[in-house]
Length: 206
Image (cartoon, rainbow, N blue to C red; front, top):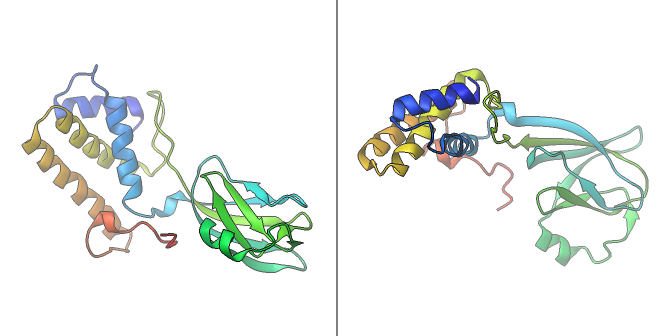
């Protein structure tokens, strides 16, 4: 389903007008679906090169959460370990020390800082979780398998009915949406206890 088809389905199911903010409701439901589980199709891998004497490395534009960073060259094989910014500030006494990076910390949502500061150019093998991009034009398609598109529409129905103050219908639609997500998780073979919205911070960043 593309965005245009999703908007048509949403308007028909929820009984709302096409002049209502259908796009906002669909994007909100898509991101709620995205946050419900570490979906395997959002895992990505890329190689980023360090710059000698520069501790900063820019992350991909679609980056959401780090999973693993490794350096693998003919002479160096190591995983770069994560430290929170607070721990990094407290434990790294000489942040300008050059060498082979052993730790990284996140700065904002798009940059990592390495320690020691790379003394050479190193290829970083970066495994991360992508963020689903907002839909904008009718030809756009959600960045997930087609079988999940209608579930996003079901979620958008919840937002539409809440906006129309139809609390009872919205509550019923909420149950339908969450049940659909639970079924998808079960089919993936990794059902978590406590419901769909209890599994997210797999990195334990806190």
